[in-house]
Amino acid sequence: MLLSKDAIGSAAERGVTPSDFYKSGHQHIHDAIQSLNVAGEPVDVVTVSDKLQRAGLLETTGGIDYLVELQNRTPAVSSADRYARIVRETSMLRGLILAASEIAEIGYSQPDNIEQALDRAESRIFDIAQNQVADTMVRLNDLMPETMDRLSEIMEKGNPITGIPTGYVDLDELLSGLQPGTLNIIGARPAMGKSALAMGMAVNVATATNKPVLFFSLEMGRAELSQRILSSEARVDSAKLRNGRLNEEDWRRIGRAIGRLSVPLYIDDNSAVTVMEIRAKARRIAAKHGELAMIVIDYLQLMGGNTSAENRQLEVSEISRNLKILARDFKIPVVAL
Image 1 (cartoon, one colour):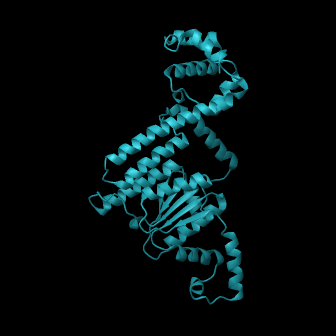
Image 2 (tube, one colour; image 1 turned 90 degrees about the vertical axis):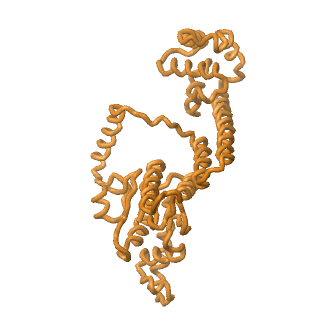
Image 3 (spheres, one colour; image 1 turned 30 degrees about the vertical axis):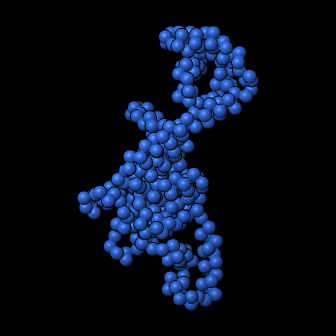
């Protein structure tokens, strides 16, 4: 980085930050280089040493002689990208060692809630893998340009559906589509079609976005659920699918429907699934198949939560809160019945 601006760019593209360096002196040197580069000033031994001198850090980093030594010991500037990758990977390995120590402490502490302990452990590893940054504080006026850009984009498109379309026109017009980071509750009396609506939304979203949609069914098994989805898509009476009394036209419709149902819709029929498990499974699907489009839970009242809750009402409130956090974390809509 002392020898080439391209090397500085390679380090930035690899996401190298001062904290990725083990020695504090190297952290200060990297910080000085980045500051000079951002300011549009030349980066070399003289300017970096001056920057460190002004900050009172030159002696602690080894002085100008050490900067010259670093420059002279660089094998090849053309390999800067490879060196940056080594720095990042080594930093991640140190983070992994630290995380392993923290996870061991979680295990040795004999936590009361095993699911929460497992989620904390998995989250710690996931954070390292995703290189997540916890700095979430932003000034309001810094958000305005982004907001204006988004409004301009909406106006240019001329499409009132700003979220993910459900495939149900009236509902989409009312909600402007399902918005990322939102928890959407579908409520109605029994046998009013809540599950059918949710299944239709799941199929439509998976078809429209070609992104994974996760459907967690606590009420119906996967066989019954897939049969109902096929019945709806093929427009064949579900009773015929149950008793097998199908005519040739029914078979043709079923064949066409199966072709249309080759979409990234994933079904989980664990009747005792918890929010912790949903989060873990969502992470794995996202890591394997890419960004999720939506999560559907059928249905909320059957979900288990924290057994320490004083009553069922508090438990459901806690489940709803965690589902909202899930939607925010994954930046997708979550639909619960």
